[in-house]
Length: 399
Image 1 (spheres, rainbow, N blue to C red):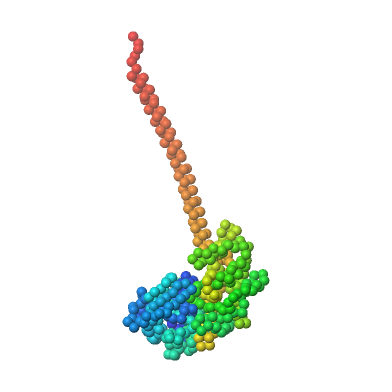
Image 2 (image 1 turned 60 degrees about the vertical axis):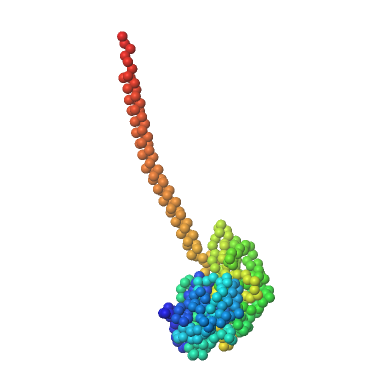
């Protein structure tokens, strides 16, 4: 089967275009046993798995007692080793998912790029051992372009031309997940205020769409928004604030550098409500866990280099990032366009209806008057005829 994405092979690294689906996740098409599967790229998952309903079950599939638990949902199935194709076929471990709970996406499974699991034949390890890539690392360049293959996964290195300045590295503090330690979390508006937190690690996860915060840290941040009302529906948080309300910056100190999120980064879109209220859909989400997770929203701003060998992550603002040039009121411009178009369309329809009705009335009134005049004239004629007939029918009384 034809692999419909282009793979660039240079200096022993692979550049693979990724498809942005609804700003929630990115997929990579992968050929498994001659069939193409669209898999979610997940740096927070350790294995590659495909939906068992879309994959022909193999006789050597070993029932697995373990399962993968995500922030929402879990997967359980059986494990097998099979051929996966990029430039050439490689023998790797996959899970055939037989029980998928509370996981809904437009994909055939997940390809995990967290750190290695000892008993799994990992794709990165295989590519490195076969000298297809020069080192055990990946670079992620994610853009916010909907349904386009402008984002890039680089296997075996990073792309210097896809980020600004230099990568700044932080050591990984977990054996499996890409967690880095931060020194402080601050909110910056008119002044800098340190958020008191009970945790000290950030998880960098392309399988999470938003920025997730434990309850305590989430409430600390929401408190800084002041005169705002929070509503939540299906995990999506909307803040309704007065127009003069100011949204602060969100800042993490990692090593000797800062990772900063502007309001334009953590707000998805805003629109005016009743002229004095600004309603904003947030890219934050509260979770019950004890981790701060920086997901797709964060990675659309920062190019990330995951180094498996040195166990570190590099960060730099990517070249596609431009949300810092937008005003908060510009977020959700497409929504405004639809509203303005709808209002204009309704106004035009009403105007046309009014003109049509006016023209109809102007035409029908004279016609109605003419009909009335003719009807009145006809009635009078009939009355005259009746009088004449009656006159003619009266007998003469003369002798």
